[in-house]
Image 1 (cartoon, helix red, strand yellow):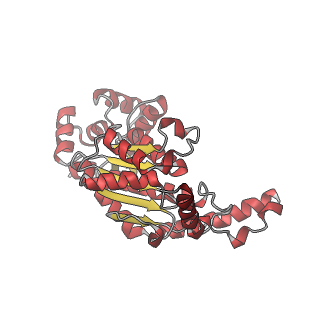
Image 2: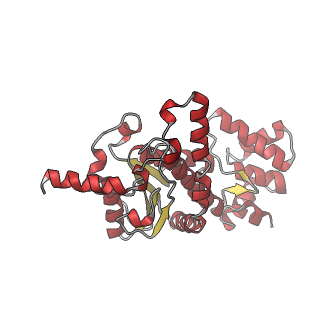
Image 3: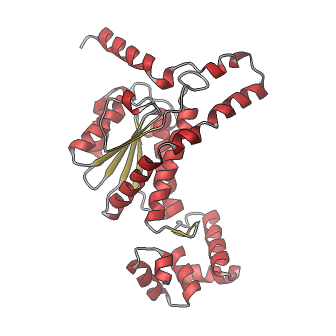
Length: 307
């Protein structure tokens, strides 16, 4: 196909996108003082939470879909480019230490590969084939669930990954910050959060990124809560991979079971570093084996195990 035609098509797509419009509220930002700049950005950021709130039902649907996928042994797989891709990788990387998930359970993929996390790999996002190749390389299949991330809604790399995942029979989701009617791909769950024009035209690392970060936090946190990885409002399935997390685990057991530091430390040792088991021992007085059995019988939910 003629390259000039492709460039004209891309130009016409971009010029109409909500994320590519000028923001009338910040037209004078180039002459603003540092304090005025902060006020302008903060005022625009304040509108993001409301835009996310308008998609409560869709985000809840995504939470249930991810929960069901993980229960069946599937994976949540993010695909994005640039800032969107980095947010997916970040969200995935934080799940194992926070919720004790296996590293393969939630994964993030970015156009251009790992190098693109630190240095922009220009052009890597421009080809659907790159997304298709990444899906193929990691052997995506049901019950995996694939979530595309693209502020503009049009990133070819993301579209390629979503199309290939759908062809393989996987459930698909899309998180974007333009209205759904501007997105030219069908998915099972569409989470469109139109945040309006950016403070600086087209700079989607700003409001668009904030909105996507909020949505991804909700999806994985909500799914992990529904999987029994939280007791009351405390994360009790954390992985003790560093000293900070070890000390946090002791503190959690201390205040939930009302015991001393030394007692919490001893229980963690007895439970082989498994926080939920240590807490169950502290709350019930049962031995390690019985506590693990109770947790297994109740799908890891401590409240249900205590009953």
